[in-house]
Image 1 (cartoon, one colour):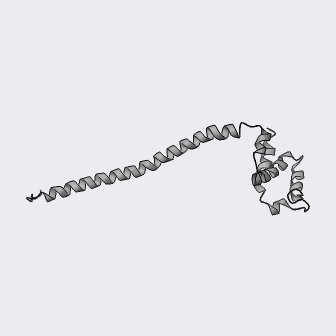
Image 2 (cartoon, helix red, strand yellow):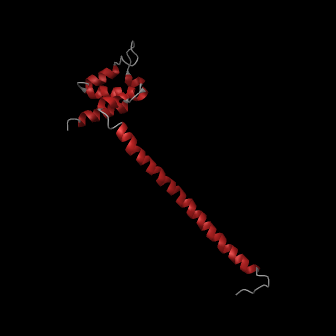
Image 3 (cartoon, one colour):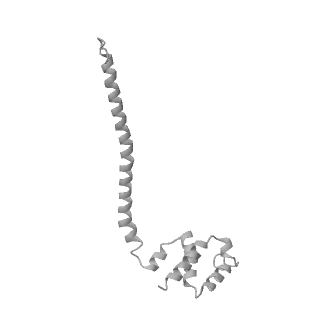
Length: 133
């Protein structure tokens, strides 16, 4: 047990400690909840934007109009994918890319060594193999 001083300083220190620890817990709680709340609002905005924007704008179009929405490098690399999927055989597609005349017209280049098209070729081969199902 504590002896009481006549000035009440001991009681004031005890109250200050209680108030500080309660404040610290509230700050920790706010610093935990606020980022989660902001993240949830952000995800809600993204989901609404995806639902109303991209689904209707891109995926609601025909295949030809979807291809017309591609531009620059996207269209360039997509053309290699289409070359693999539309070629009569895989060998013809690979031969067309090894002896590529459309990328740098007067010159015949090896597209595999000049561009990074391995992903498009691999995805085109997967598409060709699964298109039969």
